Length: 82
Image 1 (cartoon, rainbow, N blue to C red):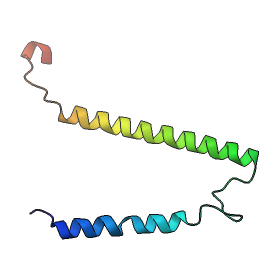
Image 2: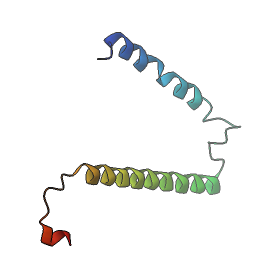
Image 3: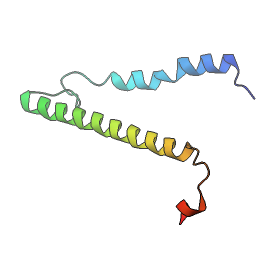
């Protein structure tokens, strides 16, 4: 059963709203996410680099998993199976 066009337009307009509301608290004097000097800025930069690497590794491993589970193994001869 196809999803109606009305539902998808409504969903694409409503889903980003919580993210926009959360990003409103990412700056300012009392923000935990805004670094307050050189040292916290370096820690924040290292965190972002490690987060990016972890996401890339996760996507890569899941991509390999999906690829190898969908590969057609074909027919093996009996002599190669033993």
